[in-house]
Amino acid sequence: MKGPRGTQDLLPGVTEKWQYVEEKLKGLSKNYNYQEIRTPIFEHTELFQRGVGDTTDIVQKEMYTFTDKGDRSITLRPEGTASVVRSFVQHKLFGSPNQPVKLFYIGPMFRYERPQQGRMRQFVQYGVEALGSEDPAIDAEVIALAMSAYRELGLKSLKLVLNSLGDNESRNNHRKALIDHFSPVKDELCSDCQTRLEKNPLRILDCKKDRDHEAMATAPSILEFLNDYSRDYFDQVKAYLDAMEIPYVIDKNLVRGLDYYNHTAFEIMSDAAGFGAITTLSGGGRYNGLVQELGGPETPGIGFALSIERLLMALDAENIELPIDQSLDCYVIAFGDETKVKAASILQKLREAGVQADKDYQDKKMKAQFRAADRLKARFVLVLGEEELENNIIAVKNMETGDQENIGLNELISYIKGII
RNA sequence: GCGAUCAUGGCGAAGUGGUUAACGCACCGGAUUGUGGUUCCGGCACGCGUGGGUUCGAUCCCCACUGGUCGCCCCA
Image 1 (cartoon, rainbow, N blue to C red):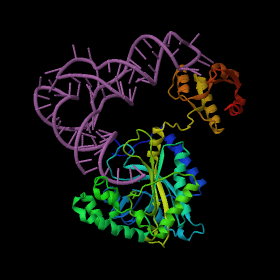
Image 2 (cartoon, rainbow, N blue to C red):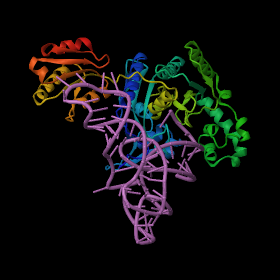
Image 3 (cartoon, chains in turn cyan, brown):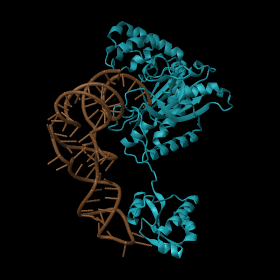
Image 4 (spheres, chains in turn purple, orange):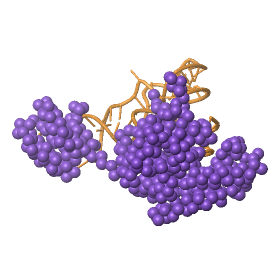
């Protein structure tokens, strides 16, 4: 038996890394005052169709959708924002005295794709959403948080790519210009782009097939169509980033795959050598119409999401070792039939006192037990034999120095607590 | 969804249409009757992803399935 395609088991040895990273991200959220929200990993299919957008690749070909026994169409969530917004609306968080509502989530997402390194069918995203504010400062805050997530772990080879998609008016004007621009050459575009021309011409801009078409280079840029409000908003976001000393590059073709974005859009990529075909570590942007689209009051919002898998890949690519403590405080070695019961009671007392401790359960020879203790990186080995038992003592060996001394059994716990 | 490639013990990795499937690491045991990390010696696949087929005979040939990897598409 093998696990389903595109899934992975995280085994001891790597789960420690995940725990470390997840704890870091939770701490980071706390610093920026984002609170955790946990939503179901499956939702009504309609949520994603409306929230993410019918024209997106995610909805068109990447969703894990099935019919449940009650004949409902259910989809495993392909991303986090739609669910968070649904929950925000359902529980009327727009009425919360604390505005904006600042939330973070961490959990598995599902997309039906051909897996390769950094792309799984089940993967884990951490993300944040700030709902209820249309202030360029919070756009910058979300971007700053995203960058900190990587920087705090020691990553250096990062590139922040920024763009503005403008407000509805700007987008509509741009959309018209795009249609006018590409319609004359429609027949020369790829089939995807021909449909995009009708439904979402913006996405023609990040088509890789038609990248070299001459109409691409001369295509109208959204930045030329930003109205005063949108341009000013974008300028302020940049000013905040400058003030925060967060470097970025503008990419006027950065479009993002989801329909709900407007104004600020950004991606963080890895520059690291040998990172592979997939370089996007995280992405996000502003989605001012989404809450209303999902039945709530008109509420602005902005968020981003990162993949833990890709974060870990980036750490590998930059040869960053996480400071994970893999040692064990004590390993109890007992030999002789008389000693075994006593050893078990000592072990229990150690653990109850908060000492990490283990013993052999394979009936191994003493030498092999020492090997096991060594492998487990035990800092101290407590040796209990017939001799020690008779004298009511136990030998405590420091595995690093090799020093060993006898300690009275009734003072063992306080002694150990003193040296670990 | 398309294309390519791969699948041998816990891990890495050789190999052949036909008696005992290299080797390295790890692990286990011994040299050391009660003390690890070094060294030496020994042990460790009724089995070569799963299911069919070809053949006197297949781990090695063919087909399907499952899974990995890489590229395309797209993203996190």
